[in-house]
Every structure is written in structure tokens, then in C-alpha cells.
Length: 328
Image 1 (spheres, one colour):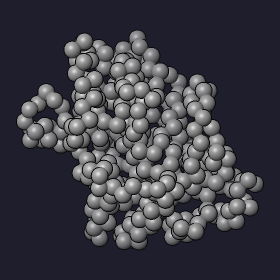
Image 2 (cartoon, rainbow, N blue to C red):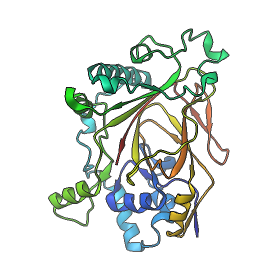
Image 3 (cartoon, rainbow, N blue to C red):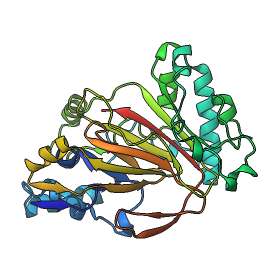
Image 4 (cartoon, rainbow, N blue to C red):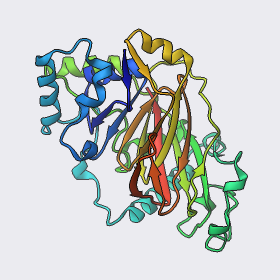
């Protein structure tokens, strides 16, 4: 039995075949925007436990070719990166996106506006700390306009659901240049020469639900800002949910349910007791939240993240985190 030391990770994109082999096995994969661990391709090492049972030498060579073929356009991305304005800094990008989100909320239906939720409401003792009280006099989250204002210093972790398109809010958000991944970053499989057949196959295999869950966090303190306590989600689909981290970072702390462990037995693989994933700007994190116990947190300012083996990553964290999620 193979122990999965880390969550299967891809560098930016993956073929449908590789994605399904990894996700079906452990119900969680990670698309990293930057090169994995500074290397050209470490995907084979990270995914060995998920796909090695059916992969021979020729298939491994083809997989490397998939990763190296940067000229192949991701099938499911509707906008090219050249159309995205180059932001001068992460703070500028954060400000622009949170301004756009506020405009989106205001243009959405009343029902969607009422979905605004304070994720850290069950952790009131960490909303304000002595370190942030002076710099942030107002730490009580009132409403989206106050929290997303360009002059706001409120600390908090909030979310809302954008799903009613009667005002075209969902359509406009999908077409926004802020939304680089309206769906998964899956590439076309080279084994099929007919592009139309490939598109039809992919669309019939991966169906993305229209709603967006948007998560917004601001943490000017040094301690992590915790969201909801550990939980699983009562969902009725097995495709999982993908989370695109648009701005800043978010730490995922996950551990497998007994049901997931039993599923992994069929693949002759074993999972660790827990995993810590620091999802960074540009990453796409895919997880079945019914089968993984999970909680998330917004890192503090100038804090050093520690992975599951207590190894410091040396990453300085931003104080703003923005991501959106869609069901698969």
C-alpha cells in the first residue's frame, strides 16, 4: 500500500485523464500556478500513489510531454491571460477585485445579497487582537459595503453566494477579467485528434454548476484568522468543488473521513492523518468537502507558514485573501 505524503499537485494544468486518475483516488488535487517546488515538473512524484497502477513507461513519457507542451491552450478557459491587465502589486490587484466584488453584490438580487455570511462569527475572540486594535479601530463586520470599502480596516472572514442570474450578475462576473478560471484548468488530451470530439467528451464529463461562492478575508494581525470550525459539507455530488485563489493566501487544514479511507483502500493507497495546504495566489484547489474534514484560515501579516511536518516555508503572508469556488 502506498502512503500519499502530499496532496496530488499539478503545475498549472493537467489532462483530463491525469486529473481524473488523481482526483478519483484521493478526492483532492492542487493546481499550482507557479512551478512546483521550483522544479519544471514534479507531478509524477506527487501523483505516484494515485495513478501508478495503470501507468507504464510510455504513458509517463506522454505525461511529461503534456506538461511541457505550453503552446496547447487550456480547453475550459474562456479568456486568455493576455487580456488580463497587469497589476502593479498584489495590493492593487486586491483593491481592484474587492471593488468589483462590491459592485457585483450591489447588482445582484436581494436573495443573493442576503447570503452574506461572516465565516469567523463563531470565533469572536480572534476578530480583534491587541496587535490590530490600534491600527484597526473598527473590527466589527457590519455589511459588504463597509467591509469591502477601499478605506476599510475591518478584520474578518466573509462569504456570499452569487447564483441568481436574473440581473445578469452571474454572467457578468464569469466574463470579468478577474475570473481566469470559470472552470477547471484542464488541457486537451493529445490522443484524440478531433477537437470537437474532445470538447464534447470534456463537457459531458465535467459539468460546472453556475453558482459562485466568494470568500473574502482581511487579517491585519499576526495570528491566523480562523473561519468555520472543522466540518464536512452536506453535498450530493461527487465531483468536488474547485477554489481559485485570486488574491493572497489561504491555509487549508484537512483530514480524511473514514468513508474516504475505505475508498482509498480500493486503490491500494493510504492517507496521512492530516494535511496542511497553503494555497497561494493563482492556485486552484479541488476538494470533495463531503469526504474531507476541513477548516480554513487567513494567514496573518508577516507570519511564517508551517506545513504538516512542521517545516517552515518562509513565506511572508499578505493581509487580504480573496477566492471563489464552484461545484463540479
